[in-house]
Length: 460
View 1 (cartoon, rainbow, N blue to C red):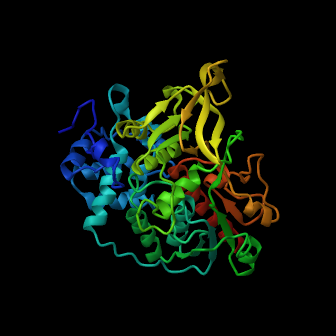
View 2: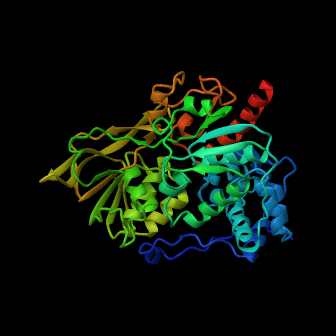
């Protein structure tokens, strides 16, 4: 029987007051009964409008149909046919702005919980299936991937399926990119990321960590070693700052550094080799998902946290779910507020001077431009400030590789096939788009894998 409820099945979560004191996953996932009930809300539309919002073209109605029939293994097979990281996407994808945005059920009521169902299927498979994965027969061609983040891992997986000998060069000591250094354990458990990476290893993908392409070896040297194409998926790890007076005081962090210490180096553990400053009062500047992650991480370390954002709640770019979770965990939001100066004592931050803002006409992004209210200055006392206002691609690769052109923001220029201005070098994800979402990076990696295959085959 179809489920015609206008509301989706609620996802169980940890209580806000409890979870703010631990790093366990917040969302607890659907049971089988919940998943089947939610799957019955899908109308199995003939034209599959939800698929147009998916960057990796998951066959959404098909896998949901199998969930409805309790054919969970078959549903997982459908997911894996197009996505290398379904357990990841089910957790961190902004489905509300992608597949779920086009769901017919959203016209009157809430869309089908596509992301929640994807997560359920991937988790069920991990707990119940023993995946027998074999390395495809090699086609004798070698491809190098720079960066083991979402775009690089997706590109590597798709090429491995086609028989390519793929080597991924990762600068950090573990693979995963932003999935391990940027997104906290309470949103994306690292064991789940590692499970997905292990599956790529079984397909023959070789990952070399502690390899900084541009330092340990160059792109030119990769070609000299016999790689016939190179994919750059190095992300956007260079943090942006506002250039405020006092921004170099102790206690002021980029979100990148703060989250890397918290996530990758597990600084929340008492015996961690990498320390992290445990603030009493923390101000986080920004309104995106990274700002929410930084604020919620600081909260778990015991700080009183205030998020400062220069626009209103309607313009807040973070996922609605993450904002709700942050509020439930006791994080304060000061909206229509912008920092103008960092105040310090004896070299340490002691407060942030802010001004109130009001919204004017729309700017180029389509959002109303924030305008300063003159004479509205006030001070927020704090001993920690985290800047989460965006990132840019690291300039290392373009400075050590001839022929790579970028736009004024440092993003690599690519053609419709994903090839850069250097023949044989492809790129995708944040290195091209600037900071974006995991699924968009995966879509770029998928597209470039197809382009690399065509490029190499055309040279034969």
